[in-house]
Amino acid sequence: MPVQIALFRAVNVGGRSLPMAALRELLAELGLVEPRTLLQSGNAVFSSPKPAASLEDLIGKAVEKRFRLQADVFVRAAEEWKAAIADNPFPKAAVDDPAHLLLMPLAGAPSKAHVQALRAAIRGSEQVETVGRNAYLVYPGGIGSSKLTITIIEKHLGTRGTARNWNTAIKLGALAATT
Image (cartoon, rainbow, N blue to C red; front, side, top):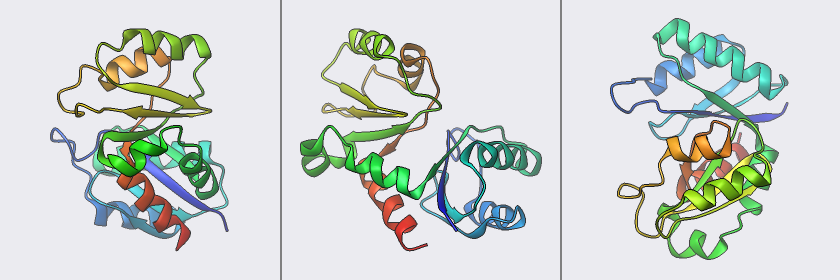
């Protein structure tokens, strides 16, 4: 059965609470096999033969109903996640500064024009590349002080997403590989 990774956007921040133990319980109730979570930021790994789009809808609606929390859910097959890690256009940042390299799964692949618009909007030393439905962002000066926010990224790319730092991306890949 295919292993899937679900990434929740903006949970357990700003009062938007989604307890991971309760999430695992809900995922099991939905028929997802061996749900496991990573950290407290809304990362789940499980097995399911259902396609990603239907899982995103199913999980999103169930979370909203159970927890009264509306959150975007991005689902990737473990093989897609493995490919996203392999496709990293910033291998030096992955080794030298993985906490400031983000992998951002997107709802859709941005056009070249959208990527160029985002690059033109960058006012600092940040860098961005996209590969398919993934954006890769490097924040050499730190993420918290950067003017390159999720709002700016999504506005210019024309799609929504959720980001994980490289350390978390690698841990999710390892968890998926053992499921």
